[in-house]
Image 1 (cartoon, helix red, strand yellow):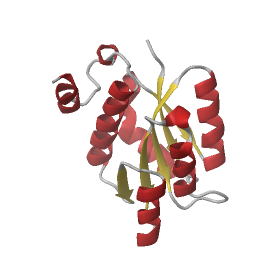
Image 2 (cartoon, helix red, strand yellow):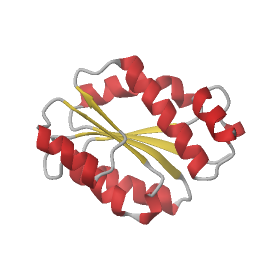
Image 3 (cartoon, helix red, strand yellow):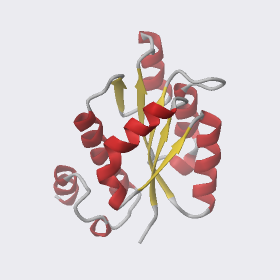
Amino acid sequence: MEKVNIICVDDQREVLSAVLKDLSPLATAFHIEDCESADEALELIDELDAEGEHVALIISDHVMPEKTGVELLTEVSLDPRFRFTRKVLLTGQATHADTIEAINSASIERYFEKPWDAEALLSSAKRLVTQYVFDAGLDYREFPDVLDTQVVLDRLK
């Protein structure tokens, strides 16, 4: 079975804990990692890629020391190794210009304001990871009960 990872990035431990709790139903099939900085996340995705593992989804806060979430997601977006990796920006402090930059440069798929709705975050993560599974050519049957049914049906048509 392929190792598929979801990476959550936020410089505040309590926010990371909340995101991990909200995504816990996906932990039966996917490895969920947490990082407290953009640089830590970049090191981790390099390690995972070197080990032949997949990075399906990155959920990142925007306002962090040293490197913002938009900068992190833009860097990932420009790396051909992660062309199928889905990206979500989760923040309470982004400006309208930041949001536009995230969409245009980082190719984010979703944007959530803090505080977020836990069910909406989980639903979006499930949908985005399912899209990744198909786009990366993985066998969707290896991930029973955690994929988004509608995405699976649409992709099998």
